[in-house]
Image (cartoon, rainbow over all chains, first blue to last red; front, top):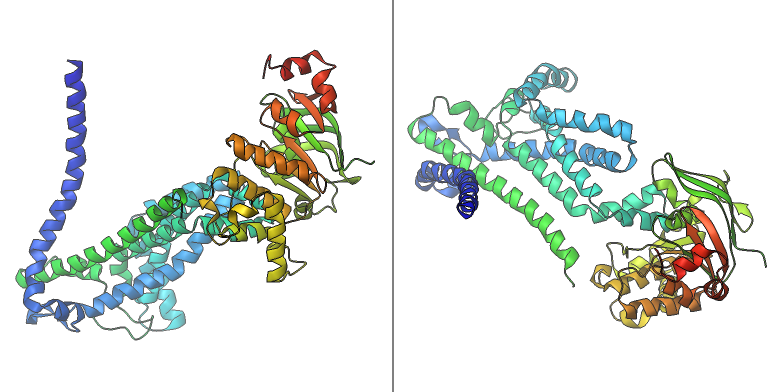
Length: 289
Length: 253
């Protein structure tokens, strides 16, 4: 009886574990089935590098949106990465316990704000600011970068902080016992040692930025055109799907799924890079070279 | 001869818990002093009080004097980084930094801003330090490989070399041989007895036998109090205190 129970519980956990992987498989298959035919009929090169997106006239070129996604994501990284990494260093190394206990929950809360609220705030606050002081329509790459830069902070901060805190205590003590100042120890020992974790934090943050839809729909302006400056509006891959899915049908709908495939591949690549980097580091620590 | 370091009525607290009680101890120059005692006796605390490394521990504070060449290391005009270069420390776990062997050794001197050293001078310094730590012959052909690739014993000797490269005056060793094999341990003990001609050494050995092998003097601590201090041979042969003899003969600890 006891043996049976052991076996049964094992099976139940297995079934539940499989179901989560199955969801991934189902989604993947569905997107591929829906999106691949259009890529095939338009041609991969024409689809990815095509300049015109006019789904009602049968023109499916998503290059402006790829540029849009890349531009906004890069912008978000430029805004979010320095702030996030410095914040992680501050929390892991400098902050007194009392301050840390305020900062950590606050940053967690930042992750809990719904993305539509970010977008709304961006639209009512960031966009007018840009329009008034920098010119242009306000709805722009810059606005999206600022909003996304803030949104990816929690991801970057928490992962980078954990990778700093996970370092053996002796690294720091060893450096300080050699007569380093605190900052010298951080700069020349702790940061290099935590490098892979910090890089992974940045990549995961970027992955989040690329996949974000709701907030950027509201502040990017969504024009399908190659931007000339960071004050120009753009449309990203995600916003394209979000905006048009409601009324798309037939080939148009397929083209949106195909957009999803491109996005999917990009995010997969980013995530596996992050995993490769973190894992590669663990192997290196144990391995004799 | 004037002692290199003097601990004068040192009381030490971790937040509320007192770890050292009225500790008075002299560290004689160019000798090896071993601090022995069961776990929790305050030995690591005493070592960390000598280079103010305890200041990293939140809530830790010390009252009393610690003199280095007659100067109180807690005085306001003492630079803590300078102090730690004069009083180097080796830990119980080998702590090679995540860089090459040679960079580990030259790390301290390179960051010492005052004297910008040439590559040649650094290489000479590294060779001297590695030789003194009896590691040179084993690594001289692969100085640019990562320090992590060394064995545990080699890593620990590398850490000793790293401290030596700073040309400190006092070296603190906190159970440097715990977790090491007997051959590595013998090599480290061997290098220590040579090093004392040039440096003053305070060691927390990982067992009483090691104190007997390397130390000129031993101090026996129990629950944060100094019980007995004297020449190793005398303390081991005729301990004045019953607790000392109980500990040395292995009745407890």
